[in-house]
Image (cartoon, rainbow, N blue to C red):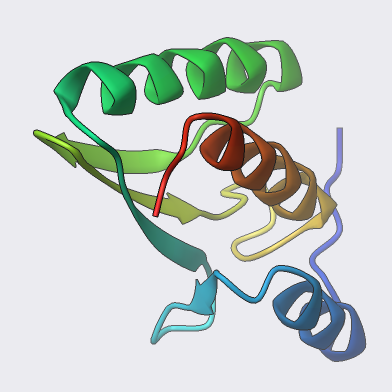
Length: 102
């Protein structure tokens, strides 16, 4: 399936809509760092996101150290950002809020 990259206007809207995310220096991904109460909360959040990502066939680039999760979203199929990243950011933001992330 062909994936279309976001236009400049769509990218601007994405960044305005999901203001907790920042554009990576190369312009090909959005990034966010989340802090949780402890490792258990961070890992639980990652598990929820992983289950959703697998169903959506769109997986984040991420790392976890104790209570901190760093996430980057990009669509490798188009070499940049797509609607898939916007959908994943929306899910991640809701899951992070539910898990009490800062």
